[in-house]
Length: 433
Image (cartoon, rainbow, N blue to C red; front, side, top):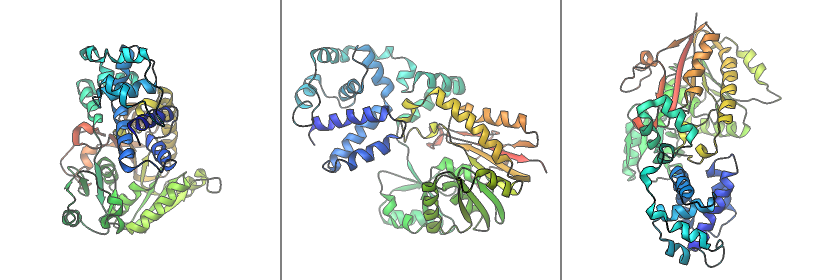
């Protein structure tokens, strides 16, 4: 592909992604499936440039506004070419609008506006633009984190690491580190999870023997920590209420040493199929995958297990704000209305899941979010309406969960600026005996 075609592809993808609710990665995959002629270098440049724009969209949009350019994805891409790729206006004009698949040539007004970019006073950039977050989200995070807010938002500018969880049903962390080292794959143990491994650089771990043999699963350290805080042990009855493709179920099964039962519920047949394949590979025989459908309604499933579960793990649908390093496009398509709708849904899910907990059992509530509205506020509201439940401080179970280091808080809040993990929240509730 020519430079012109590459730039046109970026603008086309921006138009598609910013008008859709789905993740950018899905749109990018579909885009290249339909364009087999794009070589690996073309795909890499287009994808990396696209994600840089998402990570720096606050800055770029402010520049577009200051230059009085049309607020469009074309304007975003043009400014990013100059700011990120350090291409001059002349080089842009001469090398990026010619040949097949090129976009419309630069207009005189665009050339004039872009020529003023170097003279912009970047120190006048407002905080939300500087930190590359929508203004309404910046206000929320500033209120929550106070003086720590800039560091939290800045931590989203980098890429999230690829982290593995060693499957203790099949091996130990030192063994996996040794295998990776023998294959010249640079890796290091995680700071808090006793089972985590962080890979350095770009690694196709899916085709490696440690993955194919079920020795590891891809799972961020924050999710590993949350699973461990369930403190599930051999012989217990456990529900993974919003199981997805089963990452938490697999982690909990390993802690239970494949003894007991885990009932994994989700509404997605596709995700449940993924779980079935993953549990076979991991050797996690105690997981029962249950697709919630018209034939197997949630109410019947809850009634069948009501008041019998030693542990109920609820990783509710959420904003995913803790994972926005991986999906930086999502913070620009997220809205206050979506947040309000999620908060309402979470309350409903938490109320239903609580019915499953046995007397003396525990309800573990988790999100991959950094918003208090989805986290501590939900727990406060739930406890007020459900006096039979009480909060168990994370600090009291940290060591029992086998986690390294120590934490002093009642509810666990992780953000990328601390240990490089995803943003994550976990609260542990106990039902009175």
